[in-house]
Image (tube, rainbow, N blue to C red; front, side, top):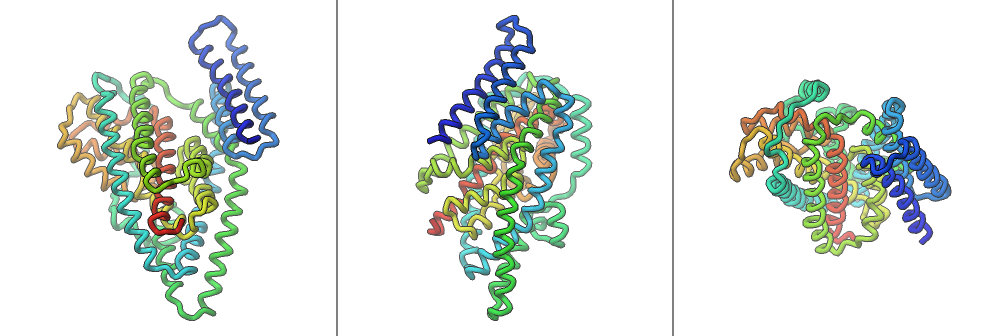
Length: 451
């Protein structure tokens, strides 16, 4: 009860700070801007003091998000240098992922000798992923066709966005959906953060270990994996203490550097995306939760920290270790969490697939092209294939978007301007990616009778 009251009180203080920002922006009074800034900072300081003895990571993250926004707005030059905080955090997270996945998968497979269950979970997970992501694609189509956000819009990308797009396109490589699943060098897979390849290697290693009949030869490696998994979860707890600062730095940098040249023209696209994401959660994820009798209150408490990290850093990877730890605490067996959650990072990108279908039609609308229903369905089929297995590729969403609109005979340069607001949209779609994968993990565990 105390934590709930603490959260409500902090939220009220943050809301007061936000309200003064809105009043200042609408020029409803003639007060000096410094007065509003002072009031906002006082509210943030009071919130900080109020939370000083609280242990809620979620509330600390929310507070530092607000501090980051205010810092980016009031002190943009200082804020630009704060990106190093989020970069440090992401580097530490990346060091966790490979050993954590390896250890938990090996223990889950070899420790229980559940080779048949691995196959069942894989089949069930893939079927679930395909169905849900397909629905997400069509919700994105419906949203953009209803809002018509790109119709009558005329804009061009700024020099900064064109330069950024050029850098991303230069790194574009051929992507073989099937071949890229399998690692050719596990060290290379770890270095390039290819999560799916790490999962495949760990599964095969675990199966190989499970097939060893000599307990004396099997036990040392299994004990090592069990010890490693426990250490990596403690490692995660240590790194998470740094999460609020990393979140504040990421938000401050985004606010200070975000381009606003085409923001008014692109605002309807942002609103359309977030409305579609909310619709997807309410119309798809919530009914799925009802079907499997998901304990919603406990689930929300479980995913609140990973979601706040994912939203503020716009990185699914940053939320992965904490999501795995919290889902296990919720009662989902480690072997299910370790298998389904990382696999979903490549095959169950609900928010990203929804965004891609929506953004592709948006580009067509800005080009003055009215895509027929058959063309839009064709586009969805292309996206169903091209969006798989690229979670670890930098700028993957933009590369897929450019390739898709080009395959439809449209001008890919029109997509460059979207980069001006991509950071805002990335926060939303990344959060839905993490939420969808956490739910998928619970669903597969339920199907397997593990909970």
